[in-house]
Image 1 (tube, rainbow, N blue to C red):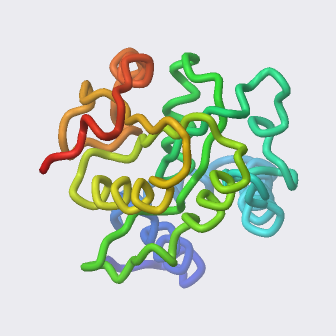
Image 2 (image 1 turned 180 degrees about the vertical axis):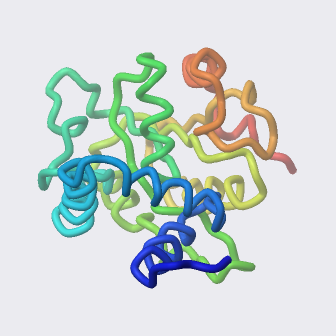
Length: 205
């Protein structure tokens, strides 16, 4: 792809690094921004810089937040004793969109995947176990994707907290095996949370 401007080429190359954006799509987006009022492009640039430099992670659940404690954890109307364990912020958004879960979350930041070099200590598992030890949790809901990595992570956490007297459950398998939560429709995801089952029942021996 030939460019008449080095500035244009640099912008396209940077845009093309985004997931699912090829060079042609990147060029179309950059040219679109070039045709917009300068103020609109500057507003987009500022929003991205502000997001990257000012965004925080909730001290309690590790969800993305503007404050030290996120709005969900700070909400007095949420059920503090019920915690839903998810992989990342996209899963929090997906479950929140159902409007059916009124507890709190714990964002692991990934799932155990030896092939990718991700072990238990690379995730926010220790802080979750500490919450359980402190007696702050009555029920732990495992809501990781139904993949081998998700099931491995669920089982690892379950073994870490097994000696403590708390209820553990997992979302019902209305979500197809191998599916990611963010792609599930809201009705199916909502039902899978409402109809959750004891975690022990999901284990395959």
